[in-house]
Amino acid sequence: MSRDDGASGQSVRPGSAMTTEDRERLKADALRALSSVMDPELDEPITELGFVKNVSVVDGTVSVDLVMSTFWCSPNFVYMMLEDARDTLSRLSGIQRVRITLEGHHDAPRINEAINAGRSFLECYGSEAQADIAALNRVFREKALRSRLHGMITATAKYGVPIDALLDMRLGDIELEGTRLLVRSEGRSIALDPGDAGHVFRYMSFLRKLGRNGGPLLIWDLEGNPPDRTELKAVLNRSRSARLSLGFNAELCKALLLARMGREQSEGLDSTGV
Image 1 (cartoon, rainbow, N blue to C red):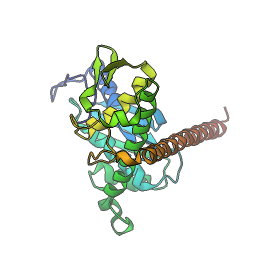
Image 2 (image 1 turned 120 degrees about the horizontal axis):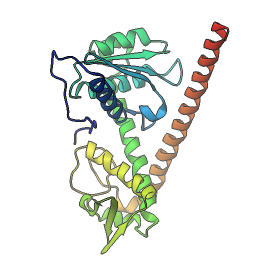
Image 3 (image 1 turned 180 degrees about the vertical axis):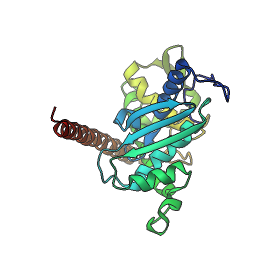
């Protein structure tokens, strides 16, 4: 399934004057769309990580200022996020041009020029790039899948649904009924509490982004293969490790960014003498 960018569905006619209402609507659409852009290494939205510093809309051009947690963030991870942000925003109705600006990074000028020219990571770095970022992105997407899988397994286990029962379930066995998320297993229909439903929904949303609208509920890789029934303990342990790793790294990243922003704010106050 294609990304749900949350756009309002309205558009601004080319050549027409953009009102304040138009600008605010497009800005809100842009922020919703950016919330679907993930840090590939952390499996967290760039909006929640605090990477989105500013969003503005002027005459159909949306400009986004981004900042990473450290000055030396790896360019390949940075490029994945900026490329995804650019492409996501470009699909919004009413947006005529997208401008991405990376701030406070050791290679920001080079990355900004390439991203806004529509160039790929390989086109940007040439012989300096050891490989295309597609293979690296795949590794982290699979890690994110397994992390989310563990979240779903542990959430449904609270309601007496064991992992071997999940293996027998299909995607259609989990459905949204009004405001409730229902899990149908072994003749039971179980309504999950909002917190537990969030873990299940997070896993299901990943499957939808893979284009999966049917088939087995539990998958272990991006091709949609289910885990081996004889290795369920290993599956649980490996998915737990992926979840803990991503969670720890995300919290560390947030702390580093918070410290960086506080330091820069303090230096700014010192320079003005305020």
